[in-house]
Image (cartoon, rainbow, N blue to C red; front, side, top):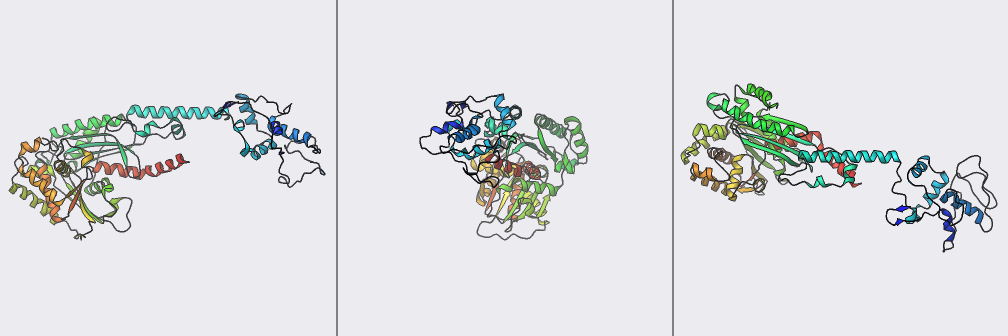
Length: 515
């Protein structure tokens, strides 16, 4: 027979044990089955093979040879004719048929008895599985390979830089044993200034891997504060960006998606009409969320940036048409969702687009900047929220999630081009934030536009965002602020994955693979 480790080796029957050099005899355990005792004085009266109609087994003689020969032939050789001679073993379909029919009970007992004493010759054949079982496993394996190839063609196994991820290189055995499909989730956020899309796959608990992303400045809320309507030019820019998003979504097998619109569509009198046009021209159905939902999603998106030692946080999201602020107090028992710790929240009807349109964003003097700060301070003064006691242990800080704070961090790091990996999660001290705001205020429009972390699209908006940030810092003084390059899309993805329990199921799968 062909052994998986030792090559081709003959299969010997049980009678070959008679030539052992140790001189020990193979003895059966007596009196263990059926409550019967067997000895030379009391011949056996029943057949251990379980087959009725066969003659009673002869008693061993003084030498023990005839009975021992017969015993060994029965349990090892399936009718061996000569002692110690190698017997041909059935292979292929014959071996499978023999195993399907089943061995005699005595043979099975003997195999169990001597299982620990087998050498290489006693190991089972590699093709020991029945043919129909092997066929089913081959079909499962082919299906798993096809699923992996299909996902790789769709790009699900490719990271941001086009490099295949490690999970796409699992061995055929692992893929065949666990042929689960990729679980992709999509989140789209159409705001007053930006249109953003994320397609991601859950990984470790509370985390996910970005498969595809899209972001474009559309300025949907341009002119909204003056007219109360979305302009035709703004709607055209937004629909063009949404067409790109729709194409990306069609090319993926998305398990679940959520597409939202925020302040611009909330305020505009033709907001619902615009969303109907979006459905007709792109096929995407967007929902307008309220301000409370927007604040909770911003908190969910940044939950991984709040450390275990933190007890109080003020998280703010400076948007294009509104700014959401959430006060978070964490006690001894922390919920799995940080949004459950929100005690107070507010949404200011002002953002970088609306504030810059009212005060001007190109040529901003220190006096004009202070006027914008005072306007936002007046809005915050109407926010009824208890004061936060700041301890000396650093258990309170600010978290900013918006283009304003990420721009400040990029300028602070003096990046040659904006890099999210270096910005997301960085800490800025109170003095560093003040220094960056003063630097931006000293630059003219062309200087701001020339900075790689600002660019011409945001050069007229960044100081309005700094004014909102300054008003928040005056209301809640903090020695440090953490920068988050994440927001509503990440919150949408986190909530959908948590609701579906994908991290719990992935944890169970890892436990199954470890067995």
